[in-house]
Image (cartoon, rainbow over the protein chains, first blue to last red):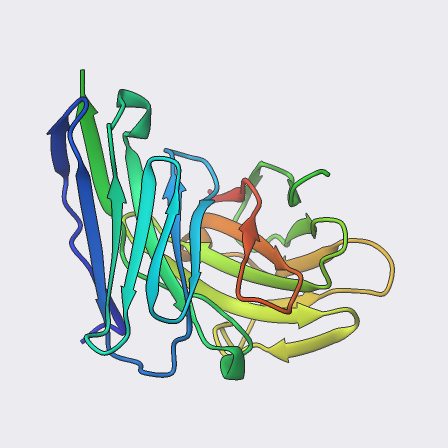
Length: 112
Length: 113
């Protein structure tokens, strides 16, 4: 079993819809949770960063962390074709030097 | 504030040659991480360095791979005697170290022919 599980998709939605992404994990030591967006042949771009449980909103993006369930989510409102990319969840623990453990990524396609 | 800079962006090496990948972290960041992304696979941690120190190299292959982050200059990931299986995208990330935030460069795509 992988330490971080993420549905690979692809997830296809019409423009304007809400995109819902999630990851589950097994290591209870994780305390920092991130979502990255990666376009083809580009580097991962940090979208959201959350410490411990709770919600965080930034523009069209909302990140949720539920440490009791070992479950994190990312919601993208009013999705645009430019949101079409692979979304990666990542998490780390300070005791492990904050090295990131990634999910496999979810491909998202927003159709105009 | 420039982001994480990696060069070269693309590197082609013949089997048996050496590959040198360079990474300059964001200004003010003293923590550097290297990750490898194989085709159709996720990002995997390789090594974590601070200035002049290797902190964690648990993800590095035991042979042929080495990394350094000297007092002056960029971090270097070196792969000796490359083989076809080393073909991948290699990403560097930097962090200020206080939080868990990490910012990535655009990567170096290594092709071994």
